[in-house]
Each structure stands twice: as C-alpha cells, then as structure tokens.
Image (cartoon, rainbow, N blue to C red; front, top):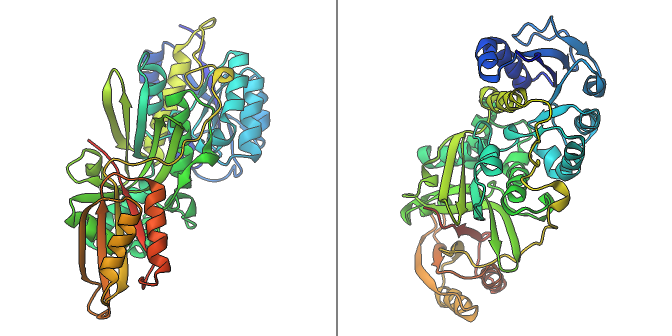
Length: 437
C-alpha cells in the first residue's frame, strides 16, 4: 500500500471541523477507496483551546497557515479560512509554490486570483481542487471539468445561493415579507449578521464567474457581471408571479452570444412547471446546456458543514488516488495560459421577456400613456393587467405588464419614460422572465 496522504487543514470553523471529523470517521472506507490512508497531520486556526467536537491531538499545530503550507509534514493543504486576500491567499500561494496540492472551498479567492493560482499549480505539477467553492456538495466542477469532454456549452445557469432561495421559498409558501424571512434565516444560521454578500448577489456572482471560465474557456471576470439582489422583492411580486404561472428565483446565468459572453445575477421569473422552479429552501441547482448532451441539471445541498465537507473530502480523495508521475489536468479545463480574455457581451433580448410592475396614480390617461411608451420602444405586450393597489391606496392602481421577447435597453428606456411622465407613486419593478425547462 502507498504511503499515507498527509493533510493539513487551515481553518477549523464549521466546515474545517466537519472535514476533520469525516476523515476520522470514514478512515477505513477512504483507505479502501483510495488505496492509501488519509490522515490529518497538521492544523492551523486562531484558537487552540476551542472545542471543535473532534480530537486533533495527533495533528501538529501551526499558528501561521503559511508556515503549515510550507512544511514538509503535509502533502495536501486544505484552505478553509475564507476571504480573497490575507492569510487565505498567501497560504494557498505558498503551498502551491512549495509543490503541495491544494483543496479550497473559497469562491472569493478563486474569483479574484484563481487564474494566477492555477498558473502556479500547473507549473508545479500539483492539483488545485475547488469542488466545494461552487454549489456546496453538488459535483458540478468535476462534471464540467472532467465528464463533458467534447461538449460545447451554450448556457449555464442556476440557483447558487441557499440563503436567497430559502428567503424566496418562505415568502411564497407563507406570505411573509422579505424582512421577516431574512430575520428567520439569520436565526437559523442560513444568513450572516450582515447578509449583504448573499442577498445582493455577490456570492452568486463569484460562483458564476468560476462556472463561466469552465464553460467557455475564458479568464475569470467576476467584476464584469450584471448584478441585482433580492432585497427589493415584495409580496406583490411574489403574488403576481404566481398568478401568471411563474415563481421568482435568484439565478446566476452565463451564456454565449454573438457579441461575447453574457454574465448576470438577478431575480428571475421561471415557469412553475419547470424543474428549477421546484428547487426549494437552501437547496442549490445548476443547469448546463450543451450541443451534445442537451441539458443537464444537478441539484442538491448547496451549503452547510456536511455538504461542503463532503465536497472537500471528495477533492482530497482524488488526490489520494493519484500517483507520482500522473499528469494532472488543467485547473479550469484549459491550461491557465490558454484561457481567452473575457469579452463582455451586451445585455441581449431574453426569451420570455420581462415582468414590469408599476404603481400609478388612478387618473384618466395613465393607462394609455404607459401603452404608448411601450409602443414607442417597439415593445410588444403579452398581457397587461390593472387592479387596485390595496385597501389603503384608493387613489393608486397597480399595472402589471408582461412583454414578449425584447431588449434590456428598450425596457429600461420605456420605464424611464413612464417615470418622467410623473405617473408613478412608487419605484417600478422589473424582473426578467427566463427560459427554463
């Protein structure tokens, strides 16, 4: 039997402790599957005294993760610190430069520095594995990087943030406000005390940028993503979507167009009969559309200690199964130096069009003025409905428009015109309708 694979874990929070526990509890199974033992030889964290529910007495302790990354006592450096700079970046870089394999769950680090780190890994002939960085326990990275040879991806999209999906699910199922659902998500540990990173779309954008690189062979471009969060989604939107046969989801979407690659994160209406509309709670889902395979949908736990630990351990096991002299594949599907510069596409027309909700003054001529603004911008309407805004708003009406396929620019121009006409009593709501099987 080959020598044991020695693992060093940097960061012993919920995920790090879960990884150590799985490696201990599943030691016999991993040895049989990998053909060698996998042992935790070293750990690094800020607090040595904290009880993490797993015995780490046999592991060498390092106060400095960079020191652990450089030590000859480990073969694999597992980074679970978090953040795109500081000790996470410096320790991963040090480990790769020292010829150590790296496993990370850090999507922010990869979104900002992934290509540069991939170049080091490929130069040193070591693995940089990151399954846990996108969609938790769903094996989407392995699928796209290894199992889809010959396929050309045309679109990849999905629900990539469990916090947002949980909030939207509760809002629809129980008729609760966004604020009430967010507070409950924080109480249950699904949302941070400062939830901005999740609810405004940043977390989804980081994950999407990694999937885009894998799908289209481009350098990661996390700063070139159109982004909207869910904090402005109201019960009025949820109810209107349901009445029209749709459900609202926060989606990350990347697709190839004639002018480049389009990346966007925003609330989206999807048909209630579609598979992705049935993904509820903290569950994640990723759909991949290709020329050979057609559409593949992967769904499962997107967050939490066990789901993330499962992906991390899977990456460690892949390293344990490799042998000296084995030629490792590129980190992002193509050699890092061959990744093409990212060319940002203009926001194009969207199949299914747009949902537009307007709260307007209840007076003669408003309805006609709205229709004229739409016509002036060549927007064809599939439906237009108006009803009272509510029992306490007798002088207001709600107008709901659903357009046929049109352009982002046309919709924005029309809504700006309606706003300038001084017909609105509240901020307009615009939600894209996404094609989904």
